[in-house]
Length: 121
Image (cartoon, rainbow, N blue to C red):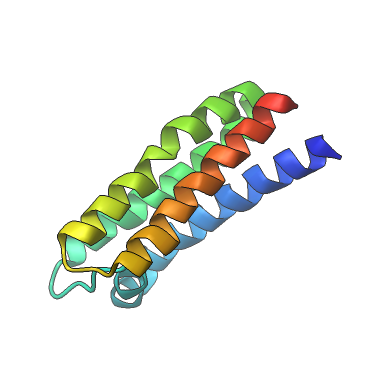
């Protein structure tokens, strides 16, 4: 049961970040608003974020499929820093604390929980 939950959560998180990255590539203004800092004319930066997030999702899926659970575990621990950085960006650029903590900090916590579950497998 633990194995199913650990793998399932890791896959869902990888797919979610892939989805978020693709959203930044295809509907950047809506994605930026949901991120917590609406963009004005910064399409290049939104594209960079889309590529970054999509890459993280694909790397996570590839690690799980081809390198194994330990590689995915360490990846999750390291990648948990990204939503923490996003939280700081939101707070520094006029975003609300609700979005900063409710989305980005919560995401970092869930990613760390995923890593812990993968360590236990």
